[in-house]
Length: 248
Image: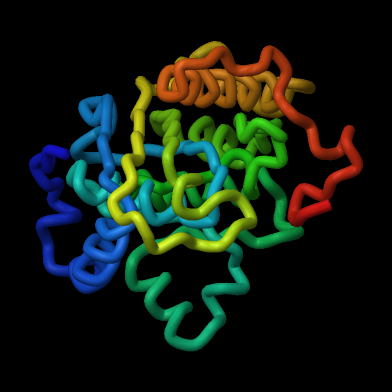
């Protein structure tokens, strides 16, 4: 995979350098990552990256792909993790974005968006919120967090699909050390056009429609990788007696 010209946030010395020195070789043992559409990831400025989620390992492959494309990978994470000794300090130092439960979605999104834009950073947000429950491992119904954030700050929302991690760490399965360097494909899509939703965030159904559009884009990209047609209707765990935060 080609290495893109680094942005200023990657070229400046930071804790990311130390993390990359550990994580990149580790991921390289398991995955040979091929990235397509890397030109769709901005080299500078704010963005929201929205990937599918089908393996406990895939945050690492998404992070490495983002790093190799010249940007520092930052994730949205539960606020409680920021209070954990050492881990919390590392998350703060690398600019991870905290999410506080119970806080108004609109006000929280605006504050987060303003910070991302001010610091010209990107953030990776899993719109499904957890591992997909779809029996065929397609993206399931999404949540509105990524859309809220993008609309609040006028930030490009970029869909991402990846496939291949299930070869060495299937959903809820154990990691397989051999054989090494299984192919993982990551496709970066073009920013989702959400211009028709701008200024309408408080209207009924708008965030749902915008989220459905994003999930459709992610599913389409995944279909390209898999060489299959994604299902017309996305899996809804609440209709199948499943929790959205854990297994059945």
